[in-house]
Image (tube, rainbow, N blue to C red; front, top):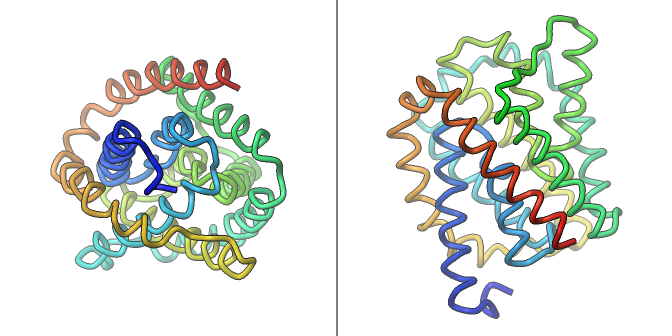
Amino acid sequence: MLFEFTPLQLVSTGLLFVWAGFVRSGLGFGGAALALPLMLFIHDQPLYWLPMIGIHLLFFSALTLRTRIHNVDWAYLKQVSPYVIPGTLIGVFGLISLPTLWLVIFIYSITLFYALLWLLNIQMHSNRPWLDKFLLLAGGYVAGISLSGAPLMVAVFMRNIAAHQLRNTMFVLWFSIVSIKLTTLASLGFKLYFVEALMLIPVAAIGHFIGLRVHDTILQNDRRFKQIIGGVLAVICLLGFMKI
């Protein structure tokens, strides 16, 4: 499909993968949540973009963790896995069974939800064990269906993990989620668009390394950054609904 794109679509795709790489390494999460709604304007098939995003997540998370694997909260990952992983599996089967229109509406809806939270500076807090479990399960489900579940899980992770371990711990979690997702899709005969994903790695790498360099700066200006992104995402999602 990538080879059938117009020059404008190719340039737009490259820029969006730069953006996804930047957000992923700059924030430690959110690359799919902030890029997928825009990608759907180019080609409105989630099952086309998600495998490529997933392959990039595997590649760049492994690259980042190569020298940071010691700075991961393994004990907490073990604690939350019984909630995140089942949610992920349910979400993957939703991805392959729901109509494309429903998937697109779901993606725009969950992204609009995040956008309004960030724009209005509303923090998701969890201070009850049952709510923690619900957010982890829901985050796993959203990750399974669209790879956009990180903000739900981060609401729990931020309260239980030291700030300097958050990004690396999330990368390990995403590596596990994406491995499950891609393995399931491949075993069921879905195309992963591996060649296209490899071709886009160099452009995504530009955003990835920029994000690594400005990670600390983004964290220091987290509120302002998210408010700006939230406003832009809200407009994008509303345009997406109008297109539907």
